[in-house]
Structure formats: C-alpha cells, structure tokens
Amino acid sequence: MSVDAQGTSRRRSRQATVLRLVIQLVGFLIGMGLLAWAVGMAFSAENQEQFERLGEAPWHEAAALVLLSLGTLSINGLVFYVTLLPVRRLGVIDLQAVSAIASLFTYLPFKMSLVFRTVFHNRRDGVPLFTIAAWFGAIGVLIPAFVAPVLLASWVREDVDLLWFVIALGGVAVIGACVVLMARWFGPGRGIERIERLADATRIRPLSRFVRSAAFAHLHAGVVMLASARAVASTAVLRLIDLGLYGVRFKLAASMLGVELSWSDAIVSGAVFFFISASAPTGSLGLREGGTIGLAAAVGIAATPAQEANFAAVALLVTASEIAAYLVGTAMGILWLRPLRLARLARNGDV
Image 1: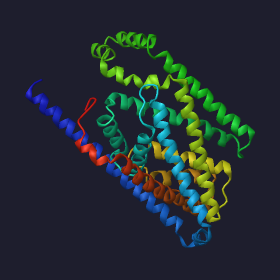
Image 2: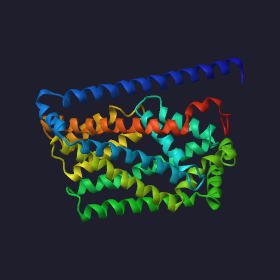
Image 3: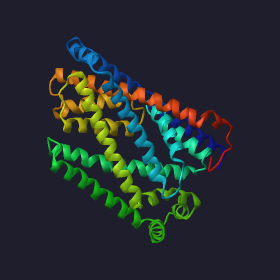
Image 4: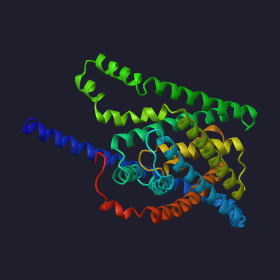
C-alpha cells in the first residue's frame, strides 16, 4: 500500500471514529432530553395526587419493587450463562457479577456495557473476541424472537387469559424451534460445508479464505449456541420469566401511585421497556422511558394527557427502583470480581 493510500485510510478511520462518537453523544443527549420531558410531565401540578399516594405506600411494596429489579438482574446473568454453555462454561456467580456491573453501564453512551463485558471475558476468561461477538449476537437474535410473541398476544387479547398464554407460549415455541433448525442447518459438520460452498459460489476469494479461518471458527460459535435446543429453550424460559417480572414491576408501580393499569397493558409496557433498554444504541436512560411513554400514548394505554402524565410517573418509579437495585448489584459485583485487577491481567484471547 502506498503512503498516500495509507494516509487516506487513516483519515477515513479517524473520520469514522469521530462520527461514531458524535452519534453516541447526540443519542445520549436525546435520551437526557426525553428523560427531562418525562420528569417534567410526571411532576406536573395536576399529577401531585399520585405522589401523595406514593408517600403513603407501605415500605414493603417499595422493597418488593427493588427485589423484582434484582430478579431481572439475576435472570440477565443466567441468560448469558446458558447461551454460552454449548461452547464454553464460565462461573455462574462470575457472570452474575459481570452482568450486574454491565447492566449499570447500559445507562451510559459509548456501549460501555459491551466494552466491559468484552474486556473482562477476553482478558480474564480468555474467550476469543470473535466468540464474544458471536455470543452477544446469539443473545441479540433471541431477544426479539421471544419478545415479539408476548407483544402479539397482548395486541390480540386485551386480557391475560388462556388464549393469551396460548399465543405467547406457542409463538415462543415455534420461533425458538425455527431458530434451532436454521442454526443446525448451518451448524458444525455439514453446515460448515454448506457455508463454504456458499462462499465459494460468490467467487470472492477473501470470503472463501475467511470461512476456512480460525477467526470464522470462533465466530461460528454463535451458530453452535443457537443450534442447541437446550440453550434456546432455557433462554426462552428465562426471558419469559423476565418479561413477567417487568410486567409485575409496572403493575406494582402503578398500584403504588394509584394509577389503573391492566395486566395486559403492564406486560406490554414492561416488554417495550425491556426491549428498548436491550437494543438502545446510545445508552438506554431516557430513550426507554420516552419510548415506552410514547407507545403507551399511541396504543391507548395512556389515551389522555392526564393518563400520559400518570403513566410517566409509573415509568419513572420503575426506573428509580431499577437504579437502586443496579447500584446494589454493582456493589456486590465489584466486591466479588475486584475489577481493578483487570489492569494487571495479561492479555489473553485475540486482544
């Protein structure tokens, strides 16, 4: 490569880095703006009655709200554990501690949550970078796969009844089975051969070489994870329990504020709240609250301005209890992992 070409490549790399930083900062500022909007609406003069009721709520309801948030935190760690299990077994408590710290980082921009998980598992556990990327990708595939049937059931049925469970559980089972079958088609053995033939058919030599490389073997670990019926089924059960806990959190928060919220609406709100939190590209704080409030207004959960203000208070109470739980979980994770030792760990894997 010539000197001019190298200089052009470096300039483009710097420009791409600056652009990513700008996008992250803009997204974070938008989230903060949405959070400020939600706070202003929730604490409006017309909405003071709800906070008076909150002050009269029993202490055990507030404690239960924090404990439910700790429950979702624990389930998140278990999801990471069972998804990786077909490829690698890591310590359950270690993964719980990592997830606790990483979950607090999801509020921040620059993908700090993914950065922390990647650095920790690569340097301490020796998990190759491409395997980590495949791991995160497998979890990312399964999130909408299991959230969508729950949202569909709530859209079809206004109440959480037998048909609601049939649609939600049936949809999760069907989608999960399709994911496993498709992954097995491209899984180890003949699946690798199929991938190689597809790459060769493109007549792109670098692609043909890549699918036969060690890096691709690490990346292919994501397919191995999704091809495991046990891992996918375990993730489905954990995710459904998690979505149930999110729904209970919204229902309990609404009850503490004296806001009417049906079980179906609570589950929809919790599912959307979780999905935005998991998929937000620039930090979830503010984006998920604003997004959940906006969806509640769009689908009729909060049809009037007064109901929208009430629902904003519910969403903020869920967030406040979650922050309290995440701070507790992070403190416990730090005590367990002592992450300051990361700076002294030798580089492992592909770093």
